[in-house]
Length: 210
Figure 1 (cartoon, one colour):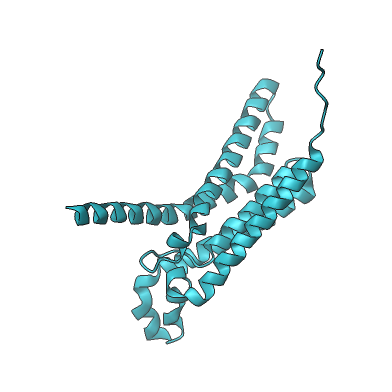
Figure 2 (cartoon, rainbow, N blue to C red):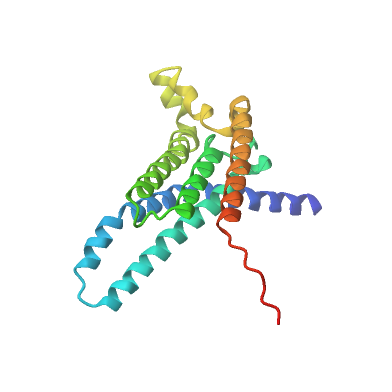
C-alpha cells in the first residue's frame, strides 16, 4: 500500500510537470502574439470616439498581455529545480532554464523602462521574447515531441537520429548541468541588478513625528 501511494504521488508529479512543459509552447505563442499586437491595438484605439471605451480597451490589453507574461515566467521557473530538469524520466527541453532567464531579462527591461512609450525598450523586449521563445519551443518540438521519431530520423541519417536526445536535458547531462548552473548564476546576478535599481530609485523620506 505505501508503495502504491508513492507511485501514485510520483506519477501525479510527472503528469503535472509534463503537462506544464506541453502547454508552455501555447503560452509562448500567445505571449508573442499579444506583445506584437500592440501596433494593431493602438491603431484600433485611435479609431474609437469614446475616450472611456479606449481606456478600458487599453487597460484590458495591458493586463492580459503582462499577466500572460508573468504566468509564462512563473511556469518556466519550475525548470530551474535540479530534480525536475536533470531527471532522466522527464522529457525537459535542454535550454528551458535559459529561456526562463532571457524571459526574466525581458521583465527587467519592462521594469526599468517603458516598452509602451519608448521604441528602444519595445525593441529590446521584443528581441528578448523571441530569443526566449525559440530557446524553449525548438528543443520542445524537435527534442521532446520528436523523441518517438528516432527510427524515422535514423532512416535519413545517423546524425539526425541523435537530435532528439541531444535536445533533452536528462539524456545529455554533460551539457544540461552547465546550462542549469549558468542559468542559476544569471538569475542571481539579474536579481542583484533589480535590487540595486530598486534601492537607487527609492526615495527615503523621514517620518514626520509630532
